[in-house]
Amino acid sequence: MTGLCVKQRESAVSLADVERFRTLPVANISDVMSRMSAGGARLRPLHREGVLIGPALTVRTRPGDNLMVHKALDMAVPGDVIVVDAGGDLTNALIGELMIAYARYKGVAGIVINGAVRDYAAISEGNFPIFAAGVTHRGPYKDGPGEVNVPISLDGMVIHPGDLMVGDLDGLVAVPQDEVDAIYRAASAKHQAEEAQLAAIARGENQRAWVDKALRAINCPGVEGA
Image 1 (cartoon, one colour):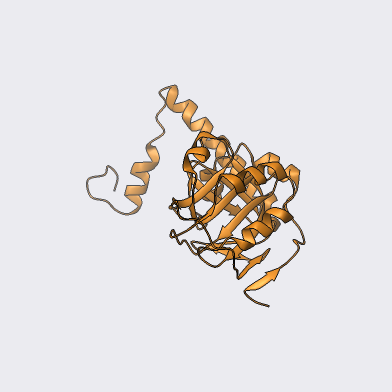
Image 2 (cartoon, helix red, strand yellow):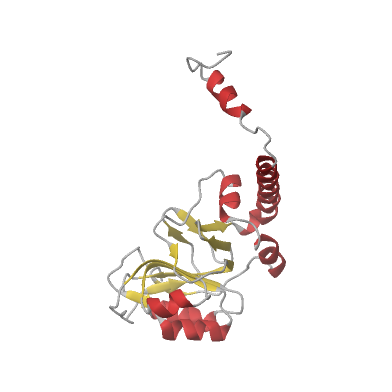
């Protein structure tokens, strides 16, 4: 029934895919996805340090209710990232220190909450990856409804169960399972090109000719050759 269902995930990105994306900045991945996919600027890393990466175990829940988040934790396998669409509501925290301890015990790789969390001191002092939209001391309800392993959306970014989630200090991006190879190749090339640019800047080489070229293309007055 729509709004109240628990499904098994049919597929997920491989461990090999997870590992090869681990060192790529989210910004490079986002750039090669046409800069059209993002989890929203409100979703910020609350932990001390460390990258969030792994296959998505998705949850859609009524704002303020974490019954299905508990179910997802029970279903999780090591390496999963639990991604919760809670409507962005900040009235009630959906997870806290106890649930995070259980997630760590299960081997979960991180949690994303489009909503609020609590026990911020413990979260901010630790390295377990937590992304959320806010913090409140008010706890959750556990009545449902909700869904596990269904397509969800975070600020317009659609996430299917098993898609690759990557999060760093710049935010979150979801890589569709069937595009991981193409996106990895493009993002890796982008990252290498930027590393080469940084090295050229350090050597004092001029990398700015493209600016005037772009201005000439739009016939900007005052630019030589325009």
